[in-house]
Length: 265
Ligand code: ATR
Image (cartoon, rainbow, N blue to C red; front, side, top):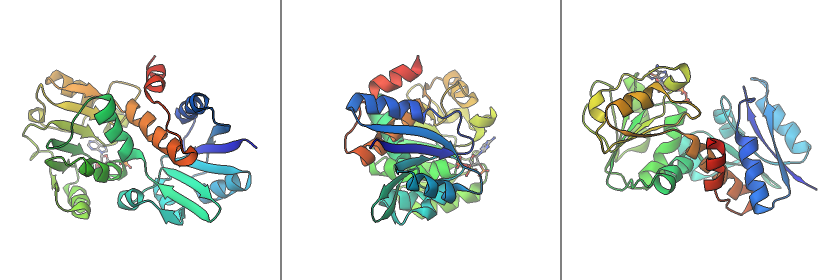
């Protein structure tokens, strides 16, 4: 029987995940389907249960269900535990396993696709919500000199930094005014077409500015570019987090480069 996978979200129609996983399945010759499922905002657990009953083997989870997926999983990877959120579920005979591949996806895109070395670098992480939290542990595993979290609501940045301890500190947007090697926008500002109020001094000609959002140029990337930085959007991260999930489910790692290239055209 063909194995079934899906992505759950609300909204979900815009998701590129079905296209990405179909490409991975073709490339690695896996007998599987992957669909997008719109779960009611108050019906995520029921939707997942129905999918499992119908033969679902695993799922991705996107906004707004990542925290609920975290609570739903009976077993968690350590990176999911630290992220406090789950974007990948695997339905095993003995229950639901939850993982979080977002941070690994970001790090893979930065290091493999963009040729960026994180070791010893100064990283500014902009935002202190779930998206930021999900990537901190995998970033720290690359041994940057430091990760500074800047957030509009400074107390959220402080609470987040406290979860990770050494190597991570919080600051306000005003206080972040020295150059960084890598500046990552993990705020929801780009979704609203807004610019986080960053100092232009964080950017130099050697800075890589990365927006986790993909699909269009954002005010953040425009601003960074106008101050000399190199820029990248989050499309590579999207494909890399999907590859990490696919590997967890199928035990075979797809080649992401042709899939990223196809999505770019
Ligand atoms: P997510 O799970 O996507 O991270 P979230 O938990 O709601 O969503 O967090 C959204 C993040 O974007 C927060 O860091 C938020 O800042 P506050 O904590 O101060 O609310 C940030 N954010 C949203 N809109 C923003 C804007 N226009 N400028 C700067 N930061 C913004």
